[in-house]
Amino acid sequence: MPRTRSKSSHRAIMAATKDVLSEKGYQGFTIEEVAQKAKASKQTIYRWWPNKARLVAELYEIESSQTLTMNPTGSTQQQFSQLLHELWSLWNNTVCGEAFCCFIAESQLNQSDLDFMLSDFMARRFKLPREILQQGIARGDISAMTDIELVLKMSFGFCWFHLLTRNLNDQSLIDAFVKQLFTSSIAKDN
Image (cartoon, rainbow, N blue to C red; front, side, top):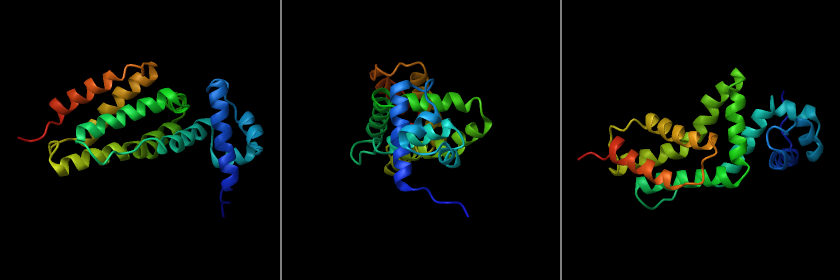
């Protein structure tokens, strides 16, 4: 029977992961240094995460879940725009941008990580924007014919391009993108 994770060890490893990533970036990031800072064994870390990409991905999930929220007021377009603004701010102002960039890059080199990213990880990333769009359809803000999966992929493609090219400072790009998306691709039914 697999042993459960110690909550205190898990917190220490996540804090050490954040520190090492913040201090050294992904290039200088090592499991050895995380283990040393967390006062945990490398064996423990590798038992819980198969590699550093998955460890960094979990840090991203924890950090982003504390920041990204859905504003219950406003139109669907306003909610979607706010979410993308929060996402870019998270990427630009926290270790999450570096973490996610690195996870995307590492996933290109490891089929298991790519499979994880495309299934489990992205399913959780799409949850909140999907809810916003589904509620928009239910309220009649956007067309009932909207292909939500396509809209999510278009939106994340736009965001990932700006993340990976380190072009997150001009947030007016978000407003232009969302306006175009909502006026041409998913405009409400007349």
